[in-house]
Each structure stands twice: as C-alpha cells, then as structure tokens.
Figure 1 (spheres, rainbow, N blue to C red):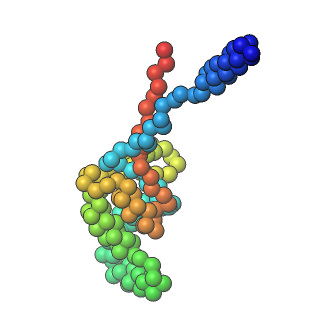
Figure 2: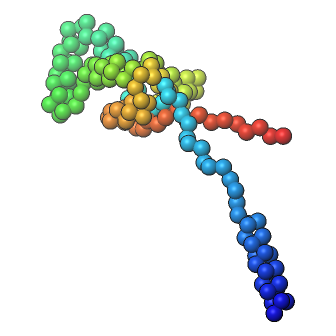
Figure 3: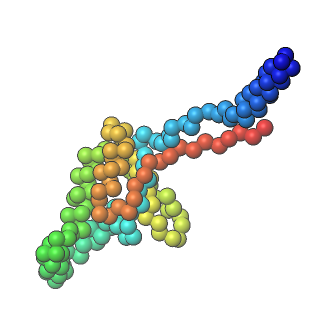
Length: 158
C-alpha cells in the first residue's frame, strides 16, 4: 500500500513539473503607441491640398482674362448643378477644417521621388485628440485613408 501511495505521489509530482515547465510566461502586449501630434493621410490621386492650392492659384491667374472668367463661370455653374464643389469651395473647406482641427503643416513623404504618392504626414498643434482629428479627416471625399503615425523602436541585439 505504501508503494502505491509513493508511486502516485511521484507521478503527481512528475506531471506537475511537466505541466508547470510547459507554461509560457511572457509580458503583456504593449499598447500601440503613436504620435499625439501627427498622422498620415493618403489623398485620392490628384486631390492633395497642395495640388488643390495650385489649381486655385492657376484659376485665379487665368480669371484675369474675361474669356476665361466666362468659361469658369459656366464650368462652375455646371459643377454646382451636379452637387459638386468647385476647387475654390473645396479649398475654403480645407482651410476652415485645418483651422478648426489645428493643422500646422503637411509634409509629402516622397518629395524627391518621381512617383507621386499623395501620401503626407500632417502635423497638428496637439490641442485636440489625434484620433478625433483623424476621424474628421476620413470624412473628406478627397481622402483615401488616414491613420495615426505609429512609433516603432528597434531592438538591441547583444
């Protein structure tokens, strides 16, 4: 009887060590970190704010000619009938939204690249929550997507 009890105790200890040894102890997954004052936005092709600003400036320069002014008038009339916005209307909307959200600047992520990506890092003044700013930007019809500027760190190797 003593041998059976000793055998059961030794089996229990051995199984306990096997199970305990196979448990994985790890750190909890850290919360994703992102910049509180920056986010990344990708505009639809040709819809970036700097393209829109150049278009508005070009239209203003061409509007000095009376014939171009008439062409713009009828073109804008057709645009408004179809419930679309003129470049000037879109520019005013961007300017007012940027002022409301505290947008300070936009930097193209590939300025020297020959391929236009319409991908920008947008800097804010940090007064508003960056996730709410991103949600506001996602509502714009010119924006393909907007996401936080995630912070990554390299690991040191011995």
